[in-house]
Length: 415
Image (tube, rainbow, N blue to C red; front, top):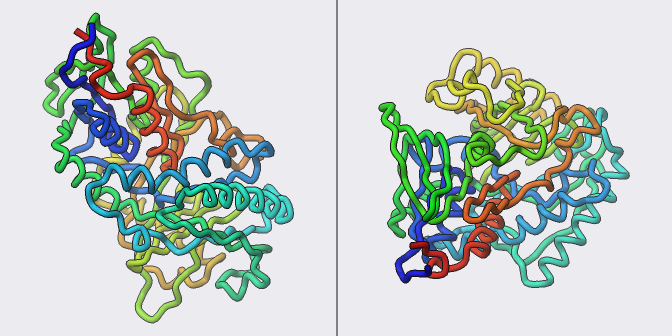
């Protein structure tokens, strides 16, 4: 029967998806508890990526543009949702990176002419959304993609055969993490740290989540609804609910390098290299630089329900190893061959994250399923919801969909 007490929800995983979901449900009146293995929220992949608000430009190898449509929807609702959920006013202008140039390398899988047509399609989709009142990282204006007449004038070497200036940006995940933590505190949403989720079971009155603390002690929490927002362990927990994966999952252990330019050195151009297993460079307003060169920064691949335990040290340890220092050196050298200004970068940190996607072949294969990312979203199993986040960009969109599906708390209390 329906009661009047607040309904309860357990949110598994405190990356950007779990944080957005917890805040969206709290706003809808749910009593929310957030659980994660890490000691603090948003410490791993969500923080260690570049925070790009994808508009779909990078999916130029998907002819029907299904992924690009989804990315546009996610990107143009990102700031609207966070402005509603975060108590602190978001300084979007200060969080934006320099706009991305898509620099086409000679080894591209897709020709510059085909990419240009794809970029025009994306521009038109974004323009329609902006005209309808949507925003992109707080902005209500948008400039269409322009081909750069001479890539060398923008700091590129001769390896770049074409370059396109876009309005796509990244938002600084470091600021967002601080804002999310402040929101949890202001809304008094409990965060249970150091919890390894073991299983979820349906009960007569909702669900029971079993977890293990760092001490090895097991415990069980009960709730009316469970939302599985785990990143690299989601499928294993789905399996405890007898929910099999729909296809093969492809995990990648991927490193990112951060640093700052030496004094009196040129600022590198924020860049995504197209199209293939290449990399990205992102310049932030505070002078810091993110980079990842795929051929070097890819440290492992795996299938199955979850990544191998052997990856855990790379994700958890705070100190940079000698091997990681060497990885940063080789990545920087490779990117500096394409953007010579990067020779002036001083490396501050080298951190690993896990990239999760459906497929079996890596992105160096033109037919790889990794060249698309549309088979993601919210999977509703009658009160147990499992979210395949897919991309940083879509986390707020999917969190809002969870809140819409579950509705306000007073309608779902079970007794």
